Length: 280
Image (cartoon, rainbow, N blue to C red; front, top):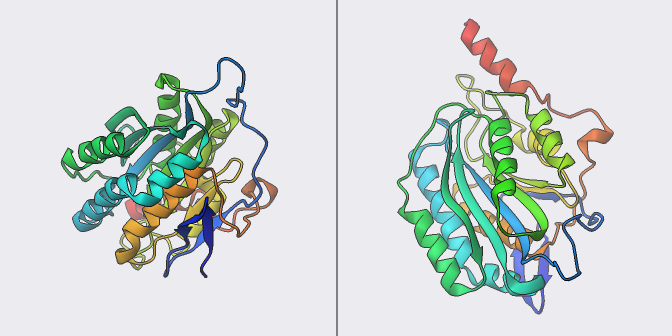
């Protein structure tokens, strides 16, 4: 499948070869942050980038993922999407996560409004040492991300959590509770499920991580996932995802919100597999 989205006159976002793009195609109602009066938001979007560094990610994947975010932020596509937004500014913060309570803030809130500020943020991302955590708490990452919005001195039309991961939640509280609490605050959650390795019986990996992310993790108006199935497509997928988020665009293929039906993958599958391993 190949779907492209145009920002202005320039083609800036295409679905990756070897992966899929999924989302809720129709934009939702205007955010409650969309004040157009004298107190108009100072940025177009408040974006929290939540990056998985759990033990199931190998060191090469961690390094490629880190480089992918840094290169995406300085890319021509990203900067063009920035200009297309209201005011031409975004507020970004970047943290890494693994088990519940193991969230490390790498980039506190920064405003990106052009090449110089983008270069500074990218350099700061690359300067931090690559690290590796333990288990996977998507719920912990979402809860941590939601709190970061409360500390953000900037206000935007949208609040978005961009969360990557290569496995289901297996630590902390159930992921659906954290997701629903964030959605109740008007936050949109998008996902980057990483499916470059075959699931192993020795881990809590699952075959349908993309469906798990669609039904258990993402949510909010226009929420979408981009699935990475090819290690070589890491950087392209990350760039596409950030461009869509900054420009306020959504992919074309619709996803029925999980609230309207039973999840296709149990939202407790990670916890169940983890418990089964402990009993062996």
